[in-house]
Image (cartoon, rainbow, N blue to C red):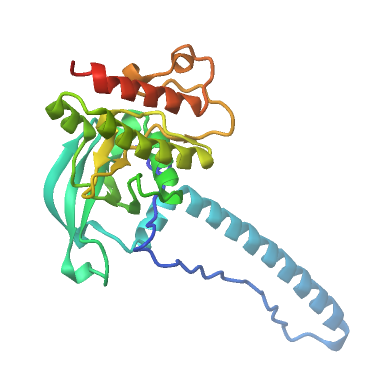
Length: 286
C-alpha cells in the first residue's frame, strides 16, 4: 500500500516551528606537491574538479530533496510534537466506513497551560482510506480545516499519524448531532429553526469567502456545542473551487439538481442544501 499521498503534520496550537538546516557544500581542492611549472595546470584541474564536485553535490541534494518529498509521511512523522500516547481514550463518539471518532483527554504530562482538556479524535485507517480511494477527500478535509477558524465550524487543533492510522484532533462538541435533537423533538419551532439557520448561514458565508464549497450539509453534520450553537463538522466533501466543479458527491436527499445532472456546480449548492434542511424541519419526521 502506498501512503505517501496522505501527508500530515501537526498544526497549531501544539506544533512548534520546524527549523530546517541546509547543508552547504563547498569543496576545497587539495593540491598535490607539484613542480613550479605545473602549478597553473594543477590549480586549473583542481578548480574544474571542484566545479564538477559542486555540480554533483547539487544534483545529489536535488535527488535527496525529491526523495524526501516522496517520503514526506515518514519525514513528518519524525518531527511530530503530538502523538497518540499523549491522550487517554474516554469513549467512542461514532464510527464510519473507514474510521471512528473518539473522545480523548489530554494526559497531564502532555498538558500545556490553558490547553483544552478534551478533544474529538478522528481516527482513519490508512489501508481503508487508500482502498476506498478517499485520499484526496481526507487531505482536502485536513487542508481546509487548517486554514479556517469560525465559531460555528469545528476547530482542527492537530494532525498526526502512525503506520496504521492518520489522526485528526478536533474540538469536542458535547451536544451531539442536530439530527438526534430533531428526532426527539419531532420538529423545531420557527424561532428555533431561524436561530439554527442563522448559524449555518454565517458559517457558509465564511467558507464561501475562502472559495470553499462544503457540499455535505445535513443534520448529521451539525453539532450542538455547550452554549447551544451549531458547529459544522465533517469536511470530507469540501473543496476549494474558484468557479465550478463536476464531482458527484454528497448525500442524495440534499443534492442540488446541477450536481445530479453533472452540469457543473458552484457555491449555490450549499444554499440549496440549506433550503432542504429548512424543509426537513417540517417534513423529515412528520
